[in-house]
Every structure is written in structure tokens, then in C-alpha cells.
Amino acid sequence: MLNNKVKYALKALLHLAREYGKGPVLIADLAEQERIPQKFLEAILLELRNHGMLASKKGKGGGYCLNMNPDLISLGRVIRLLEGPLAPLPCVSQTRYERCAECVDEAACGLRMVMKEVRDATARILDSETLTDVLKRMEHARAEPVAAMFQI
Amino acid sequence: MLNNKVKYALKALLHLAREYGKGPVLIADLAEQERIPQKFLEAILLELRNHGMLASKKGKGGGYCLNMNPDLISLGRVIRLLEGPLAPLPCVSQTRYERCAECVDEAACGLRMVMKEVRDATARILDSETLTDVLKRMEHARAEPVAAMFQI
DNA sequence: CTATTTGTCTATCTAATTACTAGAGTATAT
DNA sequence: ATATACTCTAGTAATTAGATAGACAAATAG
Image (cartoon, rainbow over all chains, first blue to last red; front, side, top):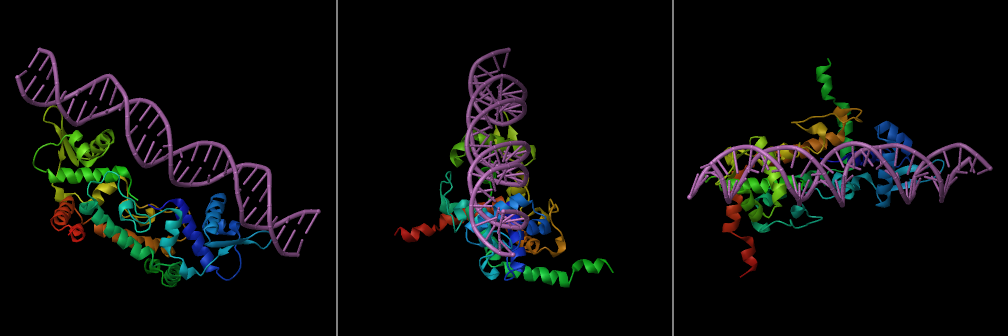
């Protein structure tokens, strides 16, 4: 399960991706429109900025904006930045491999083989899906709402 | 990331699956051979027993054994039992759906669509892979060790 | 029937993490 | 100057992780 921090970060980034190229967005607006606790959001945005993913501007007319093109930011990248590896076990992580302390024979560990498949399947999705891709999905969903079928 | 509790549980269950039909296994033996802290393992086995997955026998010649055929126990089932849903967000869980408190329009949430795909991919693997399947993988790996290639 | 073995269960503990909040400080535009 | 808006250091309450101690209960061998 993703924690709230990552979820809020992704929602905020999607919001900023939608406004990409239109100048800075106020934390307060972001917090209100995405319904995220403002002070918590502040901390998250700051962290993303310190990692170079966001840029900020102080003072009147200030705010936050993406520091790179939204099609360079994959969901996997954000999750790894704020939460850590996508892998369900550290011994199958590509980015932060760690041996299981208690493991007797890693090469013959059946659990590891299955978890490697899970990691690969997860990474295949999350590393290929960028903010731009997700925005496109959202527009598409708004254009053809499935719910409409039940609202005739 | 799976926590140690689940990892230990899965390792213990695989061990018990290997001994299935051969009578009870001592906690002490399990703990030693799988290198799991014994008292922690006790608590885990007790929980699995209280959920009906294991059976226990007190006194001399006692111990723990599987309470059902190992090909009825999928990794997904164990993870859900001890840790919760496989889904990365509660709003895409099949078994324990929960709405995101802050979500404005769930049907149009792009994040949700992607996470649904992740959940489905994960569940497809973990719900089909049983203890028996994992044991087969392990035997296979021991029969044809990849490492042998580098040890000539 | 009793000593020994082995699982059961309650209670506790520390450390880390999560999810926030307060409030003082700093930079900027006008 | 001054209002606006981000920065940053603390701190806190609640939960989870990862154990450990020790009394207790049941079963069996002899």
C-alpha cells in the first residue's frame, strides 16, 4: 500500500502537470482543490523541490511548478523518490538491492522468484506511465464517462 | 514492501508444505532452519492457526502443521490474511475497497486507473501461485543451479 | 500419576514511521 | 514598507514493526 504522502504527491504533481507552462501555482490553491492538508502538502512539495523535481518562487506571484517536462516524470520515479523501491522484497529490488539477512540460499529461494515477477510487472506499469500519460487518461475518462451508461 | 512478519510467515508455510503429511514440526526446528527469531515466529504461527490455516498439537511429539492442502494456499491469500490488500491504494482493492477521503471524482481519477492495473497484475501472480507451485520452483532451481555456470 | 516436553497466551517494550500541525523566519514584488 | 508566499525547524499523537519475558495449559511417556 502506498502511503498518503506519496498519494498526495502524485495528485499534486498531476495538478502541476496540468498547469505546466502557465506559471507558478499557490500551495493554498493546490491544497484546496486537491483537498490535501496544506501544511502536510507544504512539506511534500518542499521535498520534491529539494530533489529537483519542482521549482518554487517566493513572494507575491510565487508558488510551485514542475521543474521538468511532465512526460519525463513517471509514477515509478516519484514513488521511489518518496517511499523507496517498488519491489515487494529488498532482495528483488533493481534500484536498492539488499540481501535478506535470514536467507540461506538466495538463488534457490522460491519466494524471491515469485516476488521478482511481481516487481517486474509493477515496474513495467509504473515506470512507463508518466504524468502526461495519466493526464490523458483522465481527459479520456471525462470525455466518455462510464457512469453515463447508468444515468440515462 | 512486504513486512518481515509476512516474509517469515511465507517461509514457514513453505517449510511446512515441504513436510506436509509427515506430522507436526517443532517451532524450534522451524525457527532454526529458516533462521527466524523464535518468539516472533511463535506469534506468527499462532495467528495463522487462529485463522485456520495451521493446526497445532501440544505436548511431546507436538508442533505445527498445515491444516489444508498446500495447493489451496496461495501467496496472495497469506499476504491478505496478515498484511491486508494487495492493492497499492484502498480505492482499487477488490477485497477491502475503501474510498479515498480526499478524492473529488473517483471515476475520473487517473491515478486510480493506473493503480488498478498494478493491483490486477500483482493479484494475477500472487493469487495463482500456491505453496506447492513455489516448492516446485525451488526444486527446479536446485536441480539446475544457474550459479554452476560460473563455477566450472 | 507425575515429570517433561511443547504449544498458548498475556503483557510489555523500544524504535521507527506516519500523518500532521505550529509558528517563526525569509525572500520578493509592488 | 508591507503584504504575500515559500522555508524550515520542531514537535506530537497514533500506529506499526519487531521483538522478548514469563506464566500457564495440555499431552504423553514411563
